[in-house]
Amino acid sequence: MASGPPVRPFWLAAASPPAAGAALPAHAEVAVLGAGIAGCLAALVLAHAGARVVVLDERHPGQGATGRSAGFLIRGTADHPARVAASLGDEGTLALWQYTVASLDALIALVDQDGLACGLRRTGGLVLALDADEARDLEASAALVGRVGSRGEVWSAGDVARRTGFAGFTAGWFRPDDAMLDPARLCAALAIAAERAGACLVTGVRVLQVDDTRQGPLSVHTERGVMGADRVLLAVNAALPRLDPRFAGVVTPVRAQMHVTAPDPNGPSLRWPVYAHHGYEYWRQEPGGELLFGGCRWAEPAAERGVIDDASVSETVHTAQRDFVRRHLPAFAPLAPTARWTGIMAYTPDGLPLVGAVPGRDRRWVCAGWNGHGLALAPRSAALVSDVMLGRRPLTDLPAMFAPARFTTIPSS
Image (tube, rainbow, N blue to C red; front, side, top):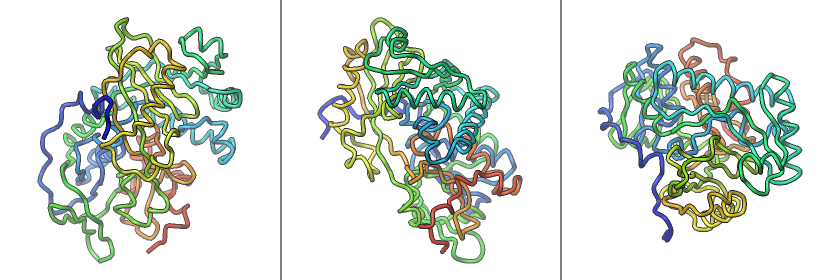
């Protein structure tokens, strides 16, 4: 039993829950399973295209991993591009970087165009290195993405200390195009926009299985009954193996943990979202002065892998987080934690998502496996896979590096 601050997700505590979901329809042209960032965006795209789309989730929009995240809009993936290049090569890494640039640009444009109230702040972002090797990774990464015109500025250890007051970092990489927002409010706003466009949102319903082995419509079995669907989009992220056991060896759930402090009596002093230590630690400060800090799952790695429980916290991880704040963020150390929470990420063996048709199941599609970086990867992925499902784009428009078929452990039947 947790003995520290209460377990209460920061974003979800502030969000107003939407009205109860609609009744389960008899049939959908597209059934979107999951109302996180990917599912809500896909529903919006599908509805705008005129499809009869139904979104099913046992929670309200954004109450899963999306609304428990840090809300960072940062280009690239969780680790530095120079390290990603070890497996993808320079050109593959730059293609992936550009994909997230286009994804985030599209999301921000949508927020602006539709006036989505989600606390968007375009302040730039800061990535920090903890040792000499990581400092070299930062420098190499900034040079690599500079080849495609991405702006940025590499800071020395002295620059970091002088500009932030942080201690013990060996280098920094400031990226002026990064941003942050309230992820729960974003999902709620996207869900409302999708409903206005004609989507049907059914919340509080647990999907039990999808049967696509017979002729005719697929059968989506839920606790409220069975719904027919022409196609199904699995946007459930870490829950993917439960609905399609063939992904059990591909998707690994990993629990992430965060905490929030009391407001700084001196007011906010940190303008940027900060990523450090290859993405293992991350933090931001709210306009009210609260510090949101996440990471340190390395303190109990075996206990955090394979976990699907997001209602509990690890005292070991919380202690490691507070120690990190004391060592490296001395100005924030006096601020007492007031709440903490967890969220479940979905990791794949190669660190890339699963976007496309499930092998051997041309009516079953997947848009999941974000490796802790869904806000950057999901917007473009959800839009592309939706258009491909409806025949508005060719299958080749989906990135081959995201194809579910790349994992030979997924049998076709």
